[in-house]
Amino acid sequence: MTGAATLPGSQRDFAAALLDAERAVPPGLRAWNGSDPAARLAVYRNNVVSSLVDALADTFPVVQQLVGVEFFRAMAVLFVRESPPRSRVLAHYGRDFPAFVAAFEPARGLPYLADVARLEVARVRAYHAADAELVSEEMVSLALASGERMGELRLVLNPSVHTLASPHAVVTLWAAHQVDGDDVAQVDVDAPERAVILRAGLEVLVLPSARGTVCFVEAVHAGLNLGDAAARAIAAAPDFDLSGTLTQLLAHGALSSIHLPPRLSS
Image 1 (tube, rainbow, N blue to C red):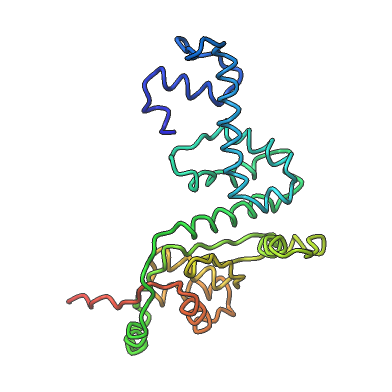
Image 2: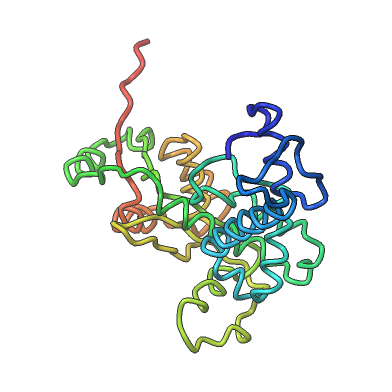
């Protein structure tokens, strides 16, 4: 579907009727075989909504496991009717679903659910992110030789890199659903957790990370240079390990470039 505001009136009415069973059949709608247009529309409506719910279930498998299929599909139907796709690419559909879950009153008893959904969105976004060259050993060597200007270095993250910080143990919850037999009931859901999510080759990694690491990555993503990003991470987490963080990022291909900006002439 394209944005409803860009459609001609008749198409806009038809698109709205597809997602709202209370709407009347759009004027002029006819079935090719002379059957009742309302009955045909009801079948088509059910197929469209069901397909979109299936797409959400593919994107949010752990959310569905946590609440059960029946609850998930009922919640997803309401989301579909409130937030239809704005792109033909269904892999992009559902980025607003975590916010919907956070405000969904029947799910209030699972305060971690929205953050699990955010983790699953980050994984899908990482998987479909653009490819990028990994930072070369030569580039790393040049960066290490920058001496007193090392703090001015600019790091460029791989487009697949995302971060997540939650007051709940969402990384452990998600991981427990990837292994058969793991006891989810033993997870302390009130333990804060953070992660860096990225794609290595064709595999999406969810790397449990310290507060300082996540803060550093977010600062780099915001455009801060190495020195300022490290300072922000230390302010948030005095035990931040810059060397260890850089080693981890390089080892997992999280950086695509490191460069030293030219000096400004006085």
